[in-house]
Length: 84
Image (cartoon, rainbow, N blue to C red; front, side, top):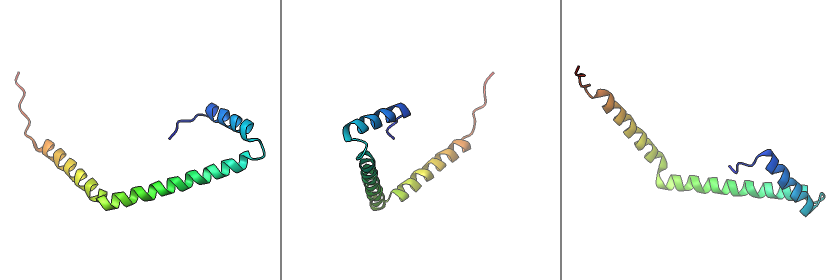
């Protein structure tokens, strides 16, 4: 999601350790993790409510059916004989 590698993570932890201190860093990480989980859960619920209200399942099914019909038409087209 954020494309954070191991070296970047170490730098972030080191800066956090220096700024916050070793005593409060675990508490800060726990609260940040809990906050991110809450936000992610809220966003997932909102997305699924929006999809239900818009009818995304029906739209996805219609698009899938159209794609199948296009593929079927392509396979049923008569092939032109090649001229030599």
